[in-house]
Length: 584
Image (cartoon, rainbow, N blue to C red):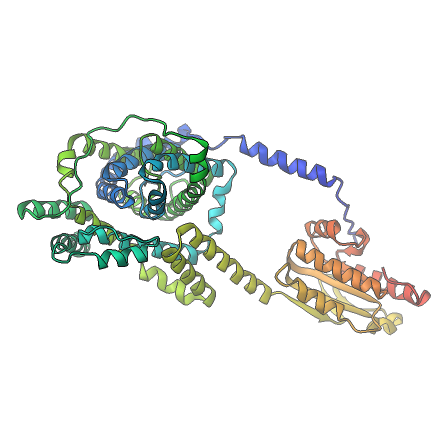
């Protein structure tokens, strides 16, 4: 039978920390794999026609959304259009996805409104730059890969909550009323309704209803048509022909503004640090989720590189801020349109920005006449699509833990803020997962003979008198902070007369520092009683963890039960030879 020897760590704690820092700092300062390469356009000779058509379609779809989200953010339609153009191009070139379309989004407008209320619209470009730098650092430190850890109920609850907030934010536009005061969207919406002049609200409500009706009818009879653009055109024509007294977008510039660096000082940076962190977290989260959706829609396209995607989104935010735009993220709806209409390379996304630039240069007078209520109607439809009952129903019905996580995330999104909602949802999912893992982890008392991979293991006939003096416990699943106390209580309760304890860990999949501390507690408690402890079946990495924290020598960790039994028999004999001592 082979020996199972585990060498203790050869490096000191300081050397281990230094090695870990070298690995981390080496990654931080390395940009390998985070920059554009010719391989990004390897498919272009075969797909450029489809890419151009997809870019044209996405540009048409993005126009009303960019204008609408710019207005909804409080920065105006121009800022939304500039953001879609600048951020769209930069993120397409530098990002990690071939399909991602970036620009202003509804989720970002939700975050921006309280910032603008506190610091003014002039703070937004600086906020975009600060947030962009943070997102770049996230990508350089490999945080992009963490998106795969976000549970589905958190994603669905977050998305549905954003839909509700976007809907509430459109009330001032579709009612032709001043935005009500209030820190939360719910309070602001209530105050907006309370202060509405309902006689003056008839015309904007009619425009909004027309846009919504055109969407609903078009989805049944004209699939594939850019319904948002069609609805905007029809609503604008109706408003012009009937000379309706409704608010319009107003004059737009015919070219991009010149880039300029916003004024920065230490006081500004301190004041915007917390909002910038919230914007950065949202930009990273929404962009990576959107890219993950796109990867699932077009499996033949190279999967998104999450760290590079964060670097690209960070650069897009910095560029948007330099041009006076908004913070930007990957936009799920526009990205999905790009994937569905044939976009396969970054050319499609770049061309969508060129289309928007053409609109700004040649169609600004026409765009200026679009009723604000029409943009509100487009965003109302966007909000309704985000509250996807078909997607929510199976998650709600899956398990109680999934339902609770989804509802908590949804409620926190609507009542609190988006970053807090994700954190709370993630915490709820983590707690539920730990409870689930702990419920499937167990400590069993075993008795010989035992069936092992060596065969049936039992005491020899001459050792029969030792049977009641050796106790065997088996740990199944996990020994971690979720159930460490239960393990300690179970093993420490071993009956009097036992002189050796074997803890079998061959079915233990999770073992952390808390589990090691629990094992150390057991070892100390048994040692005080003169009872020997042997641990069997740990993996080498688990043994290394135990050696760092548990006061057992390396020879007390063995691979097979037969080896553990030999040591336990030796402990019993040692106790017989020295009744006052014995044990390990």
